Amino acid sequence: MREDVSNTAAFPTARCEPCGKSVLTYVTLDDAGGELRCCVHCDGAIVETLRWLTASELEAEGYEIGYRPEDKPKSGGGCGSGGCGSCATRKS
Image 1 (cartoon, helix red, strand yellow):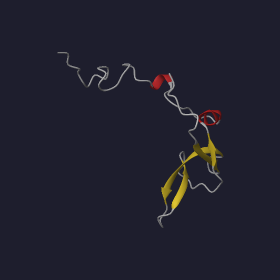
Image 2: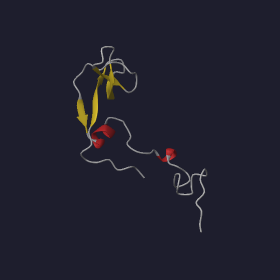
Image 3: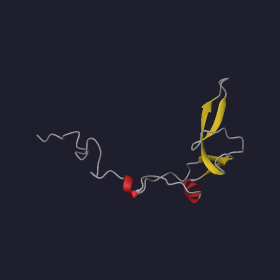
Image 4: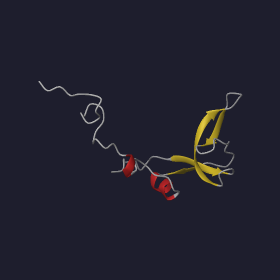
């Protein structure tokens, strides 16, 4: 099952010249302490104008939102559910 993402969520994308495609971007600081937008794939600086995409639009660009079926937890739960194997739930 895919995790739900709000219809109001927006993801910053822009064209990355080294990657040759539209990519997700992130913000970091440059040497002077100013904000610098970078590519999530190659860490190259983004100089193009940002496009803010919805989750559906982002998936149309080739990204996946949520778990891929092979990445889902096989136990059916995490810590505290008794399914992770690391914790035990006590029953009184």
